[in-house]
Image (cartoon, rainbow, N blue to C red; front, side, top):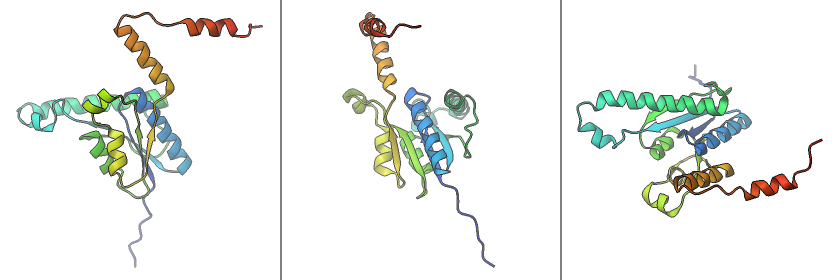
Length: 188
C-alpha cells in the first residue's frame, strides 16, 4: 500500500505592509490567486524596533515582543479590511504574521516551485534606496519561485506629492483641475 498524499495546492504569497503599495500588491495577489486557482497567503513581517539583537539585551523584550506582534496582527487585519472589506479574502489560504526581516521571511515562506511571490515594487528614489534596502529587490534576487513585483498605483505618487507640498506648507496646484472643469461637457 502506497502512502499517497494529494499534492499541496499552489500558493500566491504576498508581502503585506499596511501601505498603499502593499494594498495594491495584495489586490493583485488576490487576482492572481483567483486566476490560477491557488491559495492566497498574505504575510506581514515584523521585527522589534531596534532589531532582534538589540531586543535580546533587555529583560522586557519577551513582553514587548508580544505587544509588537499584536500590533503587527492588527496592521494585517486593517490591510485585509481595506482591500477586501473584511478579513475574509474569498479565497482559500491563510493570513500570517511572521517575525523577521521582510525579504528573507517572504523568501522562506514562498519556498515551493509552484508558489508565486507578490511584492510591491515601490517608488524608490536614490536616497531611499541608499538608506532602506528594497524588499522587492531582495526577493527578486533570492526567491526560488516566480516573483511578481507590482508597481505602485499612479495615485500613490500624486498623494506623495500632495503630502510633500503640505509638509513644506506650499499651496496645492489646482490649475489643472480648473482646466478640466472648464472643458468638461455640461451636465444635462
